[in-house]
Image (cartoon, helix red, strand yellow):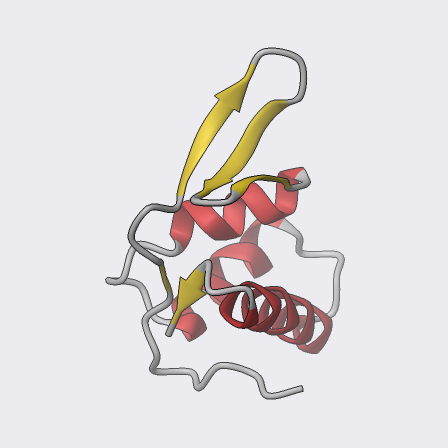
Length: 92
C-alpha cells in the first residue's frame, strides 16, 4: 500500500463531510451514504483540510498519542487515507 508523501495535502472530496447521526454520533457523510469512523479517524479527517500536509497531520497525532510509536502512527494514518482515496472519499 502506498503511503501519502509527506508534503501532500489531504482533503475530503467534494460531497464528503463530517456530520452527526442521531444514534451513531459523528460519521463521515459521502454521496453514497455514510461511513462510521472511530475517534482517531475523526481526528485525522478534521485535519484533512487541504492546507495541512500529511507530515503535519502525523505530527499532530504524535502529540495526541505520545505512547504510540511515530512510525506506527505514520503507517496507520497513511493506510487510512489510502483506503479513503481508493473509495474516492479523500484525495492527496
